[in-house]
Length: 307
Image (cartoon, rainbow, N blue to C red; front, side, top):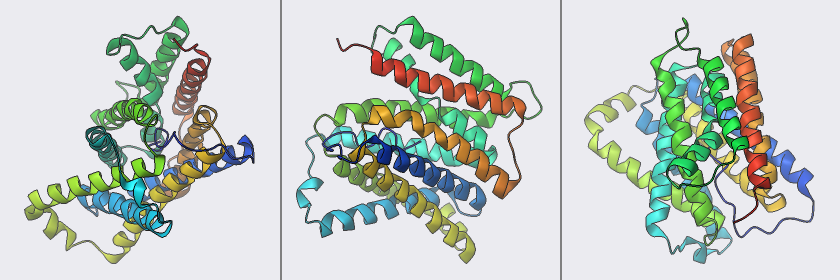
């Protein structure tokens, strides 16, 4: 889900039609679900800061090499340095909350709660931006809240305070989407993705340096197998970013976004295959309700006339 807000502008829609873009979008959700599954497999074997550092360093290197080989040096320029930095911090916070949630919660729970971002965007638009939100969108917000309650079931034996992590991830991603929408009007999508990874990597280098007394000894105890999983995680996350860019070349974001909820299905599949954790009936219903509310919000947004 961390790619839905990334890269909307300056992409010519390919003549192959929306079908190819939709197929690539579904592959994108599979890549992100695989990345999340790998994070859960790693567990606490690797410090969280190291996980995040490798994830964004890998993306920065891949995009940097790609742009350099294309001779696209001008794409490294931006007229919105402060907003680009803020965007990177928001996405980094989103990743940190997601990774923390995956350490404590089942994969489908973390993924489904992270999918609340479109609903939180509606709340932010109404409360902070003072937008006129129609009743139909408020109905989707209420529906999503009901779905969240079905997934987490407060008061139940499986309920944990750690649900705050994916909810915080959804909140930061909602802010990230709003900012990405603003930047997409003037910035190149590949530039934005590269700068996000660059700023996040720099921030993480500083954090690792500040926490080196704790982080470096822990890194010395990480086994080779865990490092292999870390590289796999970073590869899947970066692949998801690149696939998203290809999907956006072919199909508008408004068409692609509803298909992003396919990540729920892949998360459930991988959770069953790797961890033997299949969603129960109520969780499955809650996930379906969240998906329906999110898709409804996107469709309603597309039908809202421009002011």
